[in-house]
Image 1 (cartoon, rainbow, N blue to C red):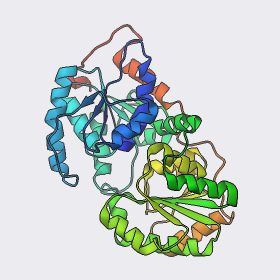
Image 2 (image 1 turned 90 degrees about the horizontal axis):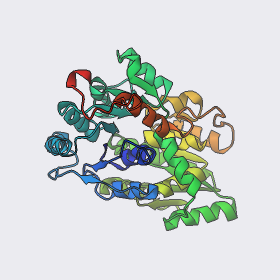
Image 3 (image 1 turned 90 degrees about the vertical axis):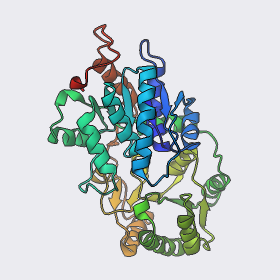
Image 4 (image 1 turned 45 degrees about the vertical axis):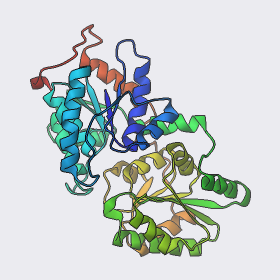
Length: 383
């Protein structure tokens, strides 16, 4: 059983579901919490996947974590009792991750943590996500670490080595799958930008700001830097898929909406986001996942934060931490756009696109399939 509640969770779970779909014993069952209705289905569709089970959870305010988790727990427990899964795969950083792991542990279903060991130094940065990851580490029976750095963090926290498997990051599998299929852009604005790049020699800067801690005053500083960059680089087009929050959209439009070379769109469908990352000469983002995706294509990233839980891209020379100081952002972007700062040629720190296949092997080992023993449940003491 693979539990998803957001688009990112669906994208990272999709390669594992595909790898399991042809398995002789295991069958993937994708469970949707209903948290981001529509976005999850849209993310799964390009992979040919559908939601198998919808949780019967009551509606909840998106910003009230206590109500969200309180609604998910009984719905998850009922689902586990009805389907009796061999294991639950959870991924992510928020309420879906934590609620799924807790409910599975209580139901004596072994928890498999996809992208385990990702860490930031501050427990409240990003807000509550870091603590959720660490709490699930105490529960998980199997830790699928994306990198050696993540595995080292787990070992430093006392996780037994035999419970950790380094598989790479499944998002590399996902973007590789979609890049290979190379579907035409569905977003009209993106299609036009592609023409500008191909016919007029224009370059593209992709920007996103999706974390709530980035909004308001920090976003204002970032937008001031973006405006200066656009005014100085006359062959640069900006693509800015804006978060649907009305206040964020109003702030973006009010600050840079008058610039002819800034294209503001609704959030992109996932295949279009992959196309945009391949097209871009530079990415400005606060998103950890986009740091991973852009690194896969060798697209340089300026991280709009003081720290990141994806330090691998920074350490390998694919990304740079610039915070939200306008002068710092402007200086770094200018250096990259003028060719004075170049992205690394090192191997992708997030793997080779075979994470899902390794995940399946680790699941087989956890469940004893190789030895011909296939337990459907394990005692809580063993998880």
